[in-house]
Amino acid sequence: MMGRNVTPQGLPLMPAPLRRVLSAATLAALLLPLGCSTALTTRREDEKRMNSSDDVSKPAPRWGIVIHGGAGVIKRESLTPEREAAVRAVLAESLQAGHAILAKGGTSLDAVTAAVRVLEDSPLFNAGKGAVFTHDGKNELDAAIMNGRTREAGSVAGLHHVKNPISLARAVMEQSPHVMMIGAGAEEFAKQQGVELVPESYFYTEERWQSLQRALEAEKQQQQTPPEQGQPQNPRTFWEHPAGREHKFGTVGAVALDQAGNLAAGTSTGGMTNKRFGRVGDVPVIGAGTYANERCAVSATGHGEYFIRYTVARDICSRMEYLDLPLLESANQVVLDVLVKAGGEGGVIAMDAQGNVAMPFNSSGMYRGYMGPDGVAAVAIFKE
Image (cartoon, rainbow, N blue to C red; front, top):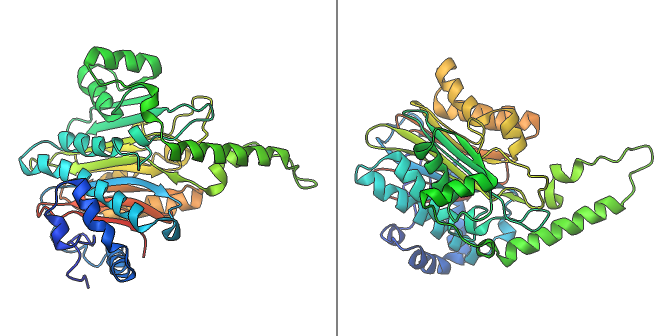
């Protein structure tokens, strides 16, 4: 049975004083004292309840928003109380930004855009300001957005100067006849549309730069280590496990259902640390990392190559459409079975037209949160 400290979706409620806080900075300040062992134990118990599906028979909310800030190798012991508080604060701010629009009767597209922009503006997540570096020491950003009611979509890839890629993806969807634009051409279109551009230095953060240096050193050591006798050198090994498994798939995303019953999904990313050759992941590939139709909306985060090969976002919605499966079962089948068997790591957030929510992931953690009609922000990071 669910405790009193969780929402109907099984997500942990934030402490009552925090629910009334709208400022992320203030929220972070309030959360910092919660680094004590007692508070952390309580929080972890809440997260255990979050992963239960005992509540699936309860009535679904009419509307709401779900967000994620990436999945991957997220270790409890490496996440300080201060860092965890800061992450939770920005997740809550993102939820509040999207929820404020929905509460006033705004569209799911506006809510998704607002929520993702908050995450893009934070250096804590691998999107926008916090984007990771490529092998050449550059930042390359991708994003996509999709309108479930019309199935219109817009996506962008290989950006270097766009402050909020999600806004450019939406401009592609609404102000052009195309779905995808890349590189210099996409940024020229951004200029025409008045989308804010910034110098490349805007995206520099010392944390991401040092992550690249560690990845480069690990790659160098791997190349200098001769293969075991009788074993051929495999050039794919390092790319399959970037930075020696010291990684987090830092995509951010949001899905929302508005009061008119329309769904939307949006996703944004800085890609993969030490990527090269213009590699593009699943985020801007409609049907892989981002998808929405009349019944289902999905935003994914994980090892993009697998999400592309298995068209993860579309597959989840297809199972609902063709097999008449409920959202949770459909999402679980794809993320916890299909992807696991294939060797793909990551997770998704998903929502259906009745407001049901699913957030399965097969990695050690996924930054995620939910807010429904009651206006209560609920966030979590780990599994049980």
